[in-house]
Image 1 (cartoon, rainbow, N blue to C red):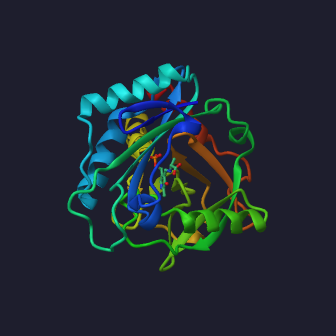
Image 2 (tube, protein in one colour):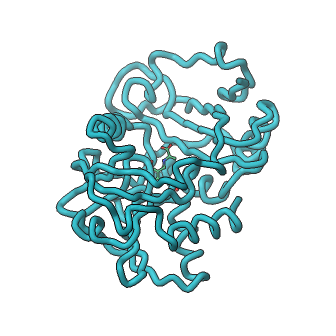
Length: 278
Ligand code: PDD
């Protein structure tokens, strides 16, 4: 792969970052994952806007203008001949002598790489996935897309150890989100329920599009927190993210959701999402 590092295009083995980089020492860095299908960037404006928001929250300045950043995204697709997969972007505060206080003059480290993988034809869409409920032990500013991903990794391992595909996280008796995706249910009355935006969850770009699509398609929705019990009793459940789009959830803690098969509204939302955004 050819990767991008601070203005240079390099073979991946030649891209080196300092051991003093605050991304490495403090997880003082933010990231974005943008899907690519047919060589085309998906939902780029949404990802760029959220990146900007994360940078403002942490006081990290992007070394590139918005136009330059878009050009780099297009160029990395071209240089890697990426047809389908994703672009990972990370920006850290940069290298500085180790100190908890932010350094005054650090130069941010901006890096991008690609991952080729099939995203449109996902075999898990036909079967659906199972999730395990786990306590949400992440920090309290999940709206900032930082690279502090240790707990989501632990949760994913724990879910796998219990035989589930994914983790849904629970805080104060309500589902927050999946370890790396937004969580949603459809009630027996056919209403989509999704947690409202706050510091408790990442503001999913796919989530926002799905709510627009639900409005257009006449599927009513409520933005409110739901409990694990409500999720288990729901007609359908699904999660959304940049490369999963809309992925059916068919079991929660070993209990089937609805019929135990991908639900019709879930599959319709996926189709509409692909038709509109891909
Ligand atoms: N994860 N919630 C969390 C905690 C996430 O990490 C993600 C995305 C989402 C969905 O956001 P979006 O629809 O904008 O992709 C929700 C990315 C894909 C990742 O970490 O790889």
